[in-house]
Image (cartoon, rainbow, N blue to C red):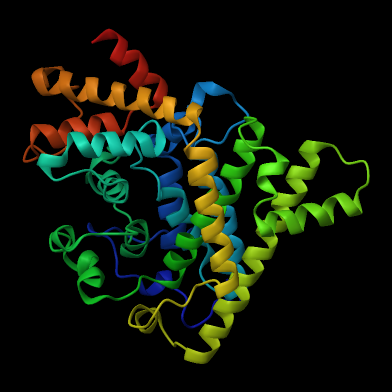
Length: 367
């Protein structure tokens, strides 16, 4: 941390944990957070949770675990370039999807519909719930007892209604403030990772081909450079080289634009960062490119009949499990429910959200 800037989060001045703990002589507080996340049950389960393709579709596709690792890698690189705290950025990145349901966004949408009359379901809030309550590893407290800074970064969005229930953690949503620089970095690193890697998985699945991908101006520019440079390149290599160049282009832009904004403001603390406009951002040109990639993916990948069919199956599984446990709440694992004050519906949502794709499918066949 030799290049840590004054605006970076500093574990020595953390806002602390919900339950007081003695400091570690070997690790800073953000390293402890990262290690607790990596050793958690919820983190291991990410290996068998869908990113775009259901986990049993093939082992070449990304899952929530590989996505989280990729976000962590991008986040650390950006944090290092800008002089922010790499360990905090990594901890936030590794934990940001812990509350995701099986079957990716299709699973979240289905569970949200099931919970519509009971407070809804949102995976960012669920990730916070996982680290604050549902993980059960320590004798002294529920959850992982992470620092305020890591928990702040997990919470990407939050409604006013939910923010009012979160105390200091929800205050920034009520006051329209920003999170730490590290949280802002992870937010955009997440977008960078899934935009590019969903294109790659779409190509591997043969849903997308070069003709379709070349409709994206930035991809086409990178692809043409690759095939000019390497005359006899294979398709898989051409795809990898094109995606690599796209990511480099976009990450470089983010670092350059953010550095200029930081230099103009000259923030002297994390609290000053929180009270100003977003400092981590793309140029207008790259923002347009990112929006084009998202629109392309929605229409050409997520809207493909194969993905829609998978989404329909996911909804059927989630609906069946929710209905079953609503009628048979006594079938929930006895040691699962962490808070007796929760409604039956919230406990069911917690249980389903923690399932892997495979477990949810097998259980739906049994009930």
